[in-house]
Image 1 (cartoon, rainbow, N blue to C red):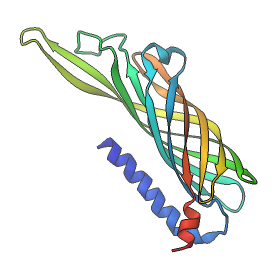
Image 2 (cartoon, rainbow, N blue to C red):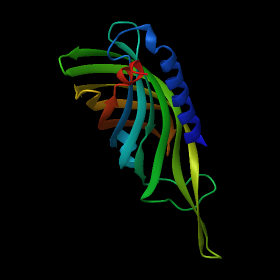
Image 3 (tube, rainbow, N blue to C red):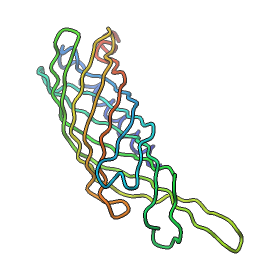
Length: 209
């Protein structure tokens, strides 16, 4: 349900971007973004999370005729979860479980294009949910019941990246710092996502329609 909600927000953003596509001849008016990589927990976050394979989906919507762009992004980061203290109502701590983020951030960025290369930075915020697993043990029936705890989380994120144009798309490498306004396991959440991926230039595609 949470993923469907975030996906719906992304689709709405695409629809808005499509309606404004004819307002400028800017060559980087609209990109879609798909990235893969790892999100590395920092500081006390590494006490309970370890990096696993992660993905991100987003858009780059050019603003005006300069280098500014709007950057909505859904972060679907995955972690190995090693519980430190049991949640309320649970007796045992869970080890080597899987935690997943469903976070929507909206950032303002600036891109500088130099020949086939582009360099960009961005900063913004948002929020969403981080799911952490729980395990209830019934010693009478010898059964383990698995469940997820939903941790609501506000997020502030800043970062930058490098792109290389290959025609109708850009290859990119991006790194950022993500700071959570809430706590998990009584510790703050902050991580450094590093990803590589591709940004198809939807401006060129839409101009042909």
